[in-house]
Each structure stands twice: as structure tokens, then as C-alpha cells.
Image 1: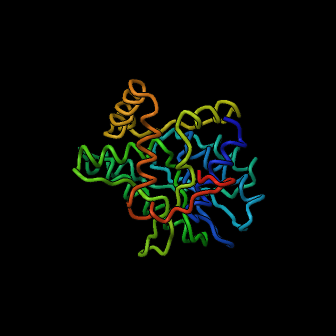
Image 2: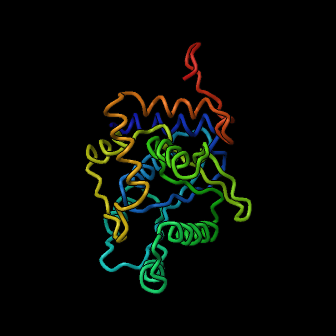
Image 3: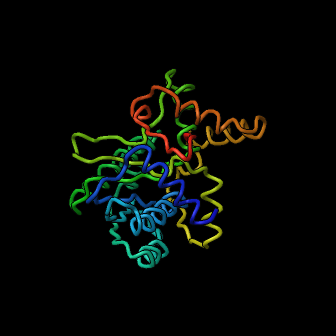
Length: 249
């Protein structure tokens, strides 16, 4: 995928869900993986021509694992002229050594989000951006159906009242294989997730399930995503479709 298409799909999400307003200061969550680095690249490029002026801050919450080399991320932020902050924590030790959590992902996510939000506020940000893409949206819906018995997925825009922050997801129109293609085309170096639970989660199982469904029934990912777009789920109903000519897209 070329940068032009990444920017086109990112702007489509930003426009249709009114994600960015003039003067926004957006904290971008950077794990070092392909999704977060694609989001960083997209927002860093979009700020140069988007009609609503905004600034961004890149933030990584380190879990405290040895050998977690973030130098490729720092090099990219310097290339894109984006301020970069690493929040050092001992979350990994707390979860896997002190508490010995049998199901660590939920607590880890809560603690990471807390550290990230706190630093975003310290840096004067009013919004935070996560790198969830189209596949993540559909996978979350499937997990909610299978595990919770309800129709739910995360929202394009979420207001975090207690933190006085607004969470946006600008990559929701981008498919995961396109992100992989973008990272490969522009030779962007990623950083491997050092978490011991990486690759062994319920989401990973659902990802494989969706991949099989898409393989056996081509177009199923897009049809499920379209059903979400046309649903009455909170926040999704606030979409203002982009109009080209006489056709909404």
C-alpha cells in the first residue's frame, strides 16, 4: 500500500467521524508494532495539509522488559519530526512475577492505558489515538458475540469523561494486510512485542478464525464491517458518509 492510500483511508475516517478539530493535540500510542507505526506515519503526514491544524505526540509505555530496543521507533519519530516520550514502568514484573496473573491481558491493558493517559495529559494532549484497524473492529465484534453474547465493538470516537480525553481510531477503514504492505514498501523497522503472552490470546484465536472465514467466503470481512457501519451501535450512528459526486462511500 502506498502512502497516498493510507492517507486517503485515514482522512476518510477522520472526516466521517469528525475525529479532529482545530487546535487538537493528539497523543499517539506507539507499541513499536506495524499498526502503531503506520498510524504515526499517517497522522504525521496528515497534519501538514489537513484543514484543521493539529499537533501530535508519540508515546510508548514500556512494560519494563530487558532488551526492548526502541531505537527504530525513535529514529522514525525524528524522521517524521514528532516529539517522542517513553514512559518507563514495571507493569510486566507486577503482572507476571508479583501477581502471577493467569489471565494477564486485561490487567496489563488497564495499567498501560492508565500510564499512557496520564502522560498524554501531562503533555497537554486533549485526544489520544489508537491504531485499531478494520480487522480489529470485526474481530472485536466476533469476540463479543462468541464470548459475551452481545453485539458490540469499539467505537470510532470515545469520550473518556473521567480523564477529560477523547479517544480516536483513525485506521478503522484500513485492512491489516494493507498495513503490512505499507510497512514493507517503506521499509519501516518494527519492534517485537516482548510480552510472554503475545500470540497466545483470545484475540489471536479470533484473528485466525476470521482469516479462515475470509478465505472460505471471500468478501466476508467487508460485509461484516459494512453491517457495523450501517448499524445503530453507539458512536457509529454519528457517521457522516463522504460524498463523491452523487454517491456516498
